[in-house]
Length: 141
Image (tube, rainbow, N blue to C red):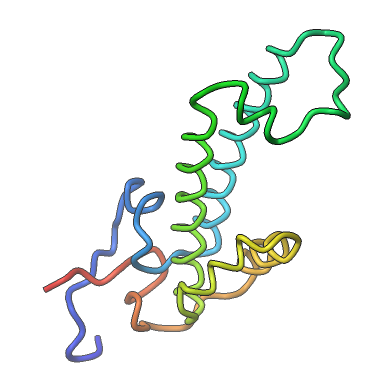
């Protein structure tokens, strides 16, 4: 281990995975985290679609209709956005880039390719300033 580095947390839990932007994240865990987000979105969209009247024109529906249909959907959207940002930041840090680049997730079209590309980039070898290995982080002293 490199001298001067703080102690490491090598077995963080689900709370760290979805809530904390600190540390590194492997490709496998990154994909699992994104899949969790997508399943939650699919469940919410399915609930919304089932609540629509049968004669509604699906082509005329907008994202605003979805968000306005249930007062909890905007809250869910904000929470899931934070989950995704935490995943993106940790994944960026795992490949050796600053988490600041996660802001590209808010740029339409580019966000799709950025999220996809991050899922295939290999982890940086050995410890870096964000953690000793993928799926870990340095604890504060």
